[in-house]
Every structure is written in C-alpha cells, then in structure tokens.
Image (cartoon, rainbow, N blue to C red):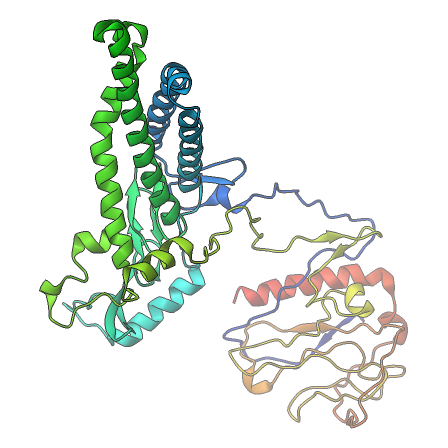
Length: 482
C-alpha cells in the first residue's frame, strides 16, 4: 500500500487556486543555485528623459547644451573682468570692487548649480495597481459605454479658497495632476507647481527649485550690470590718461566684456522683472501665459493661491519650507519576487507564509494558509497532531479513527463536496511528525471513517517522503492546468 490516500472525489473541479508551493526537495544534498542580481537604484530605471550624474545625486534634463553655454558665458566674462579690469580698479579706486564682484560671482554660480542639479518637483508615476484602480473609478463615474459613445474629458474638480480648480488626468503618468502641476514634454515628467522648462539652466523650474532659479537670474542681473558699469569706468579712466585707442590696446578684453554684457543685460533684467511680478502675485509662468486667473474669464475669476499682498507672497515663495523630493531617485529597486535563502543544512527556505513550523519545513506540502477552491470561502487546513479534528465541517472527510497510532495528524486540506468539480482524482498525503502540538480544548472527535488501513511504519518512513512529495507536486500541477 502506498502513502497516498484517495479521498473518493469523483466530481470535476471548475476553478482551482492554490497558494504557492515550494517545490524544492527537502533533501540536504540539493542546494539551490540562485543568481545574484546586481541591485539597481531607482534613477537607473527612471521612466523620464532626465540625465543623472554622481550616482543619482545630480538630476538634469536630457538637453544640456544650452546650460553649458550659460556656464561658459558667465565664466569667461567674469574671468576677463577679474583678470584685466579688477587690478586697475582696485589700485585706482577701491579694493572693494573685486571683493563685491567675487561675492556676486560665487552667489550666481551657486544658485545656477542648485537650480540645475536638483529635482524640480517631479511627481512619481502611478504603479500598475494604482493605474488600474483609477481606471475603474473613471469607468464607474462615466457609466456604461455603447457604440459611438464618446467619454467625457478626464477631469476632477476641487475647491481652493472658494475657487473651482480642475485637475487634469495625465495619460503618461496615469495620475490626476495636483493643482498647478503640469507635464513637461521635454523631460516627460509631471512637475509640481510647474513654471516652465528653462534650457539655460538645463532643467525644469518647479516647486523645489523655483526660488533658486529666481535668485540666480536676479543675482545675474546685478552681476551683469556691475561688470558692465565698471568696465566702462575702467575704459574711461584709462582714456583720460592715455587716450581712447591706447586704452583699448592696453585692455582688449574690455571690449568683449562690454559687448557681451550690453546684449545680455536687457533680457536678463527683463526676465528678472517678469518673475518679480509673478512672485509678488503668486503666479507661475504657465498660469500667466494661459491667463488662468485673468479677469477676462469672468468677474468671479481670481487667483486662489495669492495671500492678498505682495510681501506675504514673496515670503512664501522665497522663505517658505522646501518640500522633500518625491521620487527617491537614489533608493534601491525592490525585487518583485522573493529569492530563496540558502540554509546552513543545504535546504531551501520557502517564504514565511509557507513554512510555519518544523513539520512544514520537513514537508513543503503541509500549509497553514487557507486554500481557495472554485471561488468559495477559504477552507482552513490546519488541524492538531495527536488530537481530534477541530476544523472539519459536517460534509468534510476525515481520517479514520480506527487506524492504530493515527489520529488526525498533519495538516489536512479540507474540501467541501459542493465545491469539488474536478475531472481528476485528488490525492493527498499525510505525514505524522514526531513533534505533537496540543489540540484545542473544544475539539470534536473524528467520527467519519474512510475505510482505509495504513500501517504506522509507512507514515514514518523517511525514504518514501521524497517520492511522495514529487507525486503530490505532479498531481497539483495537473489540477492547476484544468
């Protein structure tokens, strides 16, 4: 007689769902060979078009050519000023001129690098589960669709300070964008409080780097005016001593500085003034271009984000707390499936929901988790060892109580007759472990006999466990293919 016990089930099973079963042999001679995958950081699999440097610490846009042009113009102009103009001005006017110029230069470069290398406020994309849930909510809201049905635009409305604001759905990120957020087509990201994409700094300008961008253009305006004014002063002082042509020959770099500053000061100062207006009214460039809060749209249209006066708006934009980054670009990518962990005895450890005790580690087929069959209620599979059955229903088969040395041992997979509809016969093995657990106090005795007689020595035969285990797995694979 083999160790398999036939439960006498003849009806077919329509749908069978099983918990994951550890199919590794329990023999200590077999050691699992698992591949050690290199752990990646999230910036390496980032879905946008950004570039990352220094192991994800620096984040920039894909197109950075104009940013390098900005760096070259500032460095070359400032370098020529400090090399050719500052020595003459320091000796003939005051040493404070190169000192003030140096402070402005350092501040400009610091703000430029901070605005260019930081996360502008990228919003993380929805996971597949979140995207599916949003799609279900949209379908439930729009109702059933028929032929020729055109769904309404995907928007949601929220009220902010009495003003109705529409939240638009992003088909790329699969999220409803928060207020003031927009999707940058160049970086392919949704950015919180999106202002604009600035190629001069090589990054988007959003909630997390707007203040650095504004301080950069403001300080650059002062530096440009400062260099332009003192280069002209230098040329005039030299012209009074040696003549205009001689002054140009003595300091040829001054001509280049004047040309660069003259053509750039207008755009830089104009841009600084425009963003000063935006900060004072608590608007973004995107909102101003679209006219989102223009009075032409209606009498009741107003900016719900303004604090009422320009001082408070400026303090909120420049002195408010800096929000943290939401994308965790330097975090580690978590694997989707857990890898088996090698044990000291050479066996493979299954997930924690499959191995709960010494007996479950000995035989991976013994589970403490419920098994769902045919979409019915979860069937509890845990019974006690050396004690009466406590989890079998009236219509569930039980082990024969007349077998010597056998009393409802192991973990029994309970199957209801009304839920069993399978074309194959279901075989179930029962192994009794020497370790016994106490039975519950309100246990009921096993009254139903299956009519099979098994010798106790067969139940404790360790040599037959591996073959029985393989047969069981093969049978379960057949059932899962139905």
